[in-house]
Amino acid sequence: MSRRQFLLPESEIPTRWYNILADMKEPPPPPLNPATREPIGPEALAPIFPMALIQQEVSSERWIDIPEEVQEVYRIWRPTPLYRATRLEKALDTPAKIYYKHEGTNPSGSHKPNTAIAQAYYNKKEGTKRLATETGAGQWGSALAMACMMFDVECTVYMVRVSFDQKPYRKSLMQVYGAEVYASPSEHTAFGRSVLAKDPDCPGSLGIAISEAIEDAASKDDVKYSLGSVLNHVLLHQTVIGEEVRKQMEMAGDYPDIIIGCCGGGSNFAGFAFPFMRDKLTGEKPNTRFIGVEPSSCPTLTKGRYEYDHGDTAGMTPLMKMYTLGADFVPPSIHAGGLRYHAMSPIISALYDQGFMEAQSVGQKEIFKAAITFSHNEGIIPAPESSHAVWCAIEEAKKCKESGEAKVIAFNLSGHGLLDLSAYDSYLSGRME
Ligand SMILES: Cc1ncc(COP(=O)(O)O)c(C=O)c1O
Image 1 (tube, helix red, strand yellow):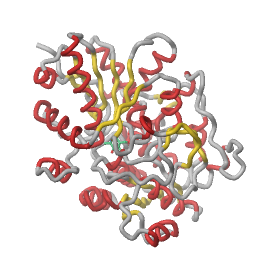
Image 2 (cartoon, helix red, strand yellow):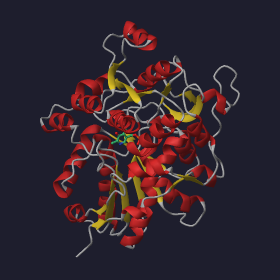
Image 3 (cartoon, protein in one colour):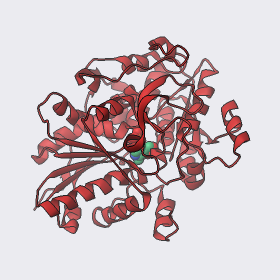
Image 4 (cartoon, helix red, strand yellow):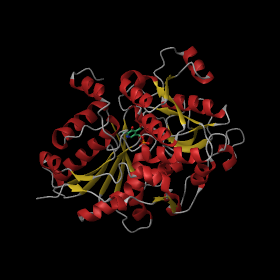
């Protein structure tokens, strides 16, 4: 009988984050000042981020200690379980072994608190009174709302309008945690008002919501901005996921041949994959395949250009070298709101450009079909974002059936979909486009 659960004791929660920049021979090119096109110094970020996070953003130290106060909150839900999807393997009749890490077991339901807790902590320590942020599907907003509540920091969330309308209970969750929530584009900022003036029915995008949150933060001294993906320090905090998985795969006696994660701005993929990518970068495991999966309606890696672009629509952020569809790209209103971002993290963009990883894109009906196959066998209902990874794992397992290869496939189940049931309704009723 195959073992299904690989659970670590509390004492095995990582005490350090892994910084992949230390192992990249060609790190991403530096961010630029849009006016001068010269590299920006850390001081340019000081109006919107606390110094500790700015230092992490530019650090090339391989390991960064996790403060005890952050570890103390991680202990509410970490370590998270790694499962072997034995029932799914059987249903697919595949010789492949499929493992998944379940990051949806915490109170807010996704991987996002791994960085939200750290960001709220450092902000509190440096005297921030309120944090402003954007959210797509609401997973990031609810994670930051929870983190702010724990460290007694106020929280304002600009939630992309299409998700605000599709996912009212995510908004309620954030409000329960004490956050104030605006549908973006909103009347609350000058940029939001300018977008609404041109298009009163604008569904919003992460790029627009980021501009609103930055405008809110930059105009006040005791308000800072917090980003849930893309930036180096966010990816860094997420590596607790993959560091745990390394130990759990050891318990299972396997090492993954294929590592899969969905990609919005890249943080759950990075957190899951980078601790294994380390072995590829150092040449120890040169053949591991890494696959980032994105929606075909927002195909940043698969169809974007690798060039300097803004991280937001209003052009308030520095220019970063990223795969991008253009900062003014407004993706269609798909249900995987957390994947509707026009660009990709600079680190992931560089790794993709250098051939260390692959990317695939897939349409939304296919991901819901895969999610339902998964839930029929494993019970868990995945978030629409995570379902992109589920789809890819199933496709790779089917290829193993054809080739007869018993590959080890590992994917990150970045969140549960229990507050995304309206999306499942739309799929099941045949209304989904
Ligand atoms: C469950 C889930 N997975 C994935 C993502 C995508 O973000 P990232 O690429 O930073 O992991 C989101 C974003 O909101 C999310 O909520």
